[in-house]
Image (cartoon, rainbow, N blue to C red; front, side, top):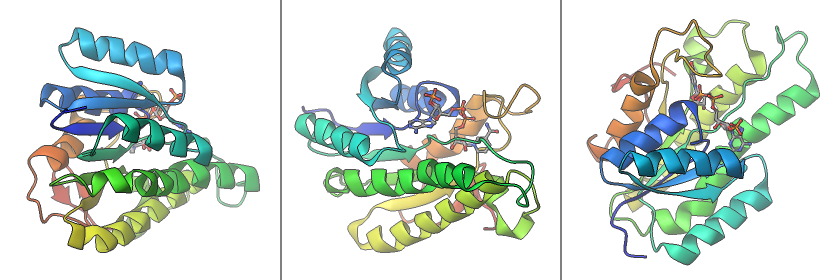
Amino acid sequence: MAKDRIALVTGANKGIGYEIARQLGEKGYHVLVGARKADAGKQAVGSLLAGGASAEFVAIDVSDRASIQKAAKTVAATFDHLDVLVNNAAIMEDAKSITEVSDDTFLCTLTTNVLGPLRVTQAFLPLLVKSSEASVVNMSSGLGQLSDMGNTYPAYSISKTALNAVTRQFAAALRDKGISVNSVCPGWVKTDMGGANAPRTVQQGADTVTWLATEAPRDLTGQFLRDRKAIPW
Ligand SMILES: NC(=O)c1ccc[n+]([C@@H]2O[C@H](COP(=O)([O-])OP(=O)(O)OC[C@H]3O[C@@H](n4cnc5c(N)ncnc54)[C@H](OP(=O)(O)O)[C@@H]3O)[C@@H](O)[C@H]2O)c1
């Protein structure tokens, strides 16, 4: 299909992911709304279309390799390139302390939050390389900063540290292909994950991602950013 600019956002049915999809839609992207639950994904697409965006649902469970491969195949059957990939989907189901975290919690968190973005980026790479200026954004968290790490949300925090390493590896691997790859911390944002006490809005949380995808300098890659500025790893 001859769409000019195409973006895929995983976990776009709600929260920051939905807002990223909305902002990219507003900027003229055709947005592929990635969601694991069809009802929620289609409902989000309905809202985006009602707001004047161009959007469609793509079924993708980032914890399931077969689902990721199926999604990539489905998208490749319709589109000849992908300009923006936002690896936003994540879970935060955690133990209170690293001294108690179970194998199951740890493996499940790493599968979704680390292997998910890694596999999704690999699966969509054939489409990303066909874009003239592709951008991959991995939604990370300040909790993954080694420079400021304590003993809270152990599995989640470690998953985001590992995701930042995934960002660095892909940034180095894809620099020559002109594909930028960055990590973003959205700040503490009011969503189902962030909770009601979070001080930031989804608009604030999504801003740096949209900026990276649309306006940031093309040579900005391999960075960890919050509020459009590099932050320590
Ligand atoms: N909120 C914050 O304060 C904060 C702070 C730092 C970083 N972040 C990061 O920002 C991103 C978005 O967070 P949020 O606050 O918007 O969270 P949220 O409201 O809980 O939304 C998370 C999204 O990820 C999806 N998801 C989870 N597991 C999935 C899977 N296996 N396959 C596909 N989709 C999956 C969820 O789908 P379902 O609806 O099906 O569950 C939902 O759409 C995450 O990467 C999070 O780690 C958030």
